[in-house]
Length: 160
Image (cartoon, rainbow, N blue to C red):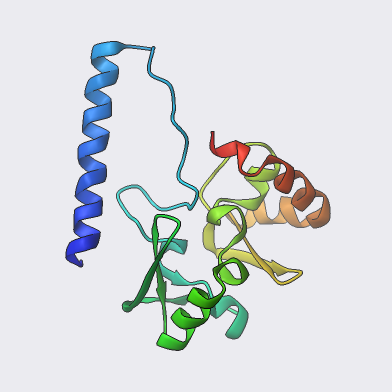
């Protein structure tokens, strides 16, 4: 793990412990301040679970990224399988980053957030969408245009 990634992970742990202590001390007066704009696993800062978001468009499948080819975007670390993919992302991140920050597209369409799984994806009109799992993806695919309209209307309010 790179020092910067380790430092961010350590900072998250310290923040979680501090908030837990504050909640225990202050009680229910603490409110949720919102979720990150890009989904990352607990104690991780990697977007798309470390998969290369450009690979969905160029290779037609998820390809694991490398710590050799990384960039920061919207508070998360994005990994790529090559310098060319990293550079393409840097030039136009909105083109390659999954919609709704990589949260599950179906969940966002329903008004909440859930993990987006890089193995359950679809590109629609040139945009990448992730879903929680195969069952949820089937629900989403039953009305893709309708779910996209609903999710677009809910995003980014669902992060609040």
